[in-house]
Image (cartoon, rainbow, N blue to C red; front, side):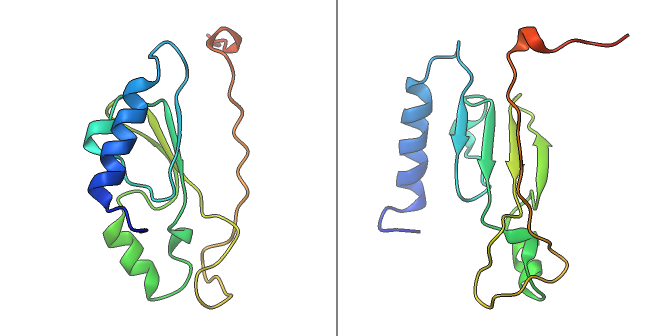
Length: 118
């Protein structure tokens, strides 16, 4: 984390999300897959990375303990979603073991374009 601490980042995030109107889709881009308590319910989709799905043994245990969502899409209790990408890069040694890279394509459609099949 840079010179600004996690508490300061969380406060800034809260202010920014409060300023966004509820009538529009709110996309939160955040490196670490942590959903701040004060941000819950204030965004529709948070896109994060950081974990590399563990990348290599034994670091995968650290990410499993540190972050509740390791990879993929999670439906949050607050009504939004969190998507954690495994990413394409690496941290440290240039290897990935049991954590293949991914490029994610997310199509955002207006609610009027979504149809329900019965």
